[in-house]
Image (cartoon, rainbow, N blue to C red; front, side):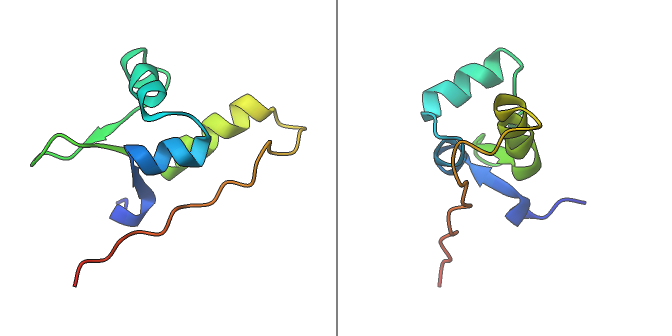
Length: 78
């Protein structure tokens, strides 16, 4: 089972890929990437493994990544 740390919110996922949140919404609507919804509020969460697959697809198997993707730190509530 996946852990919540394996998912990014839309703003984090957009930053990770170097695109806007609107682009991610469009990709989801077109079926290019799957967003998981939080049942309580409907927020989109993107699985880190899916985002990495998108980067591999864009960059190709033999090319270096166009950027060093960093997972944004999560904000912890006290």
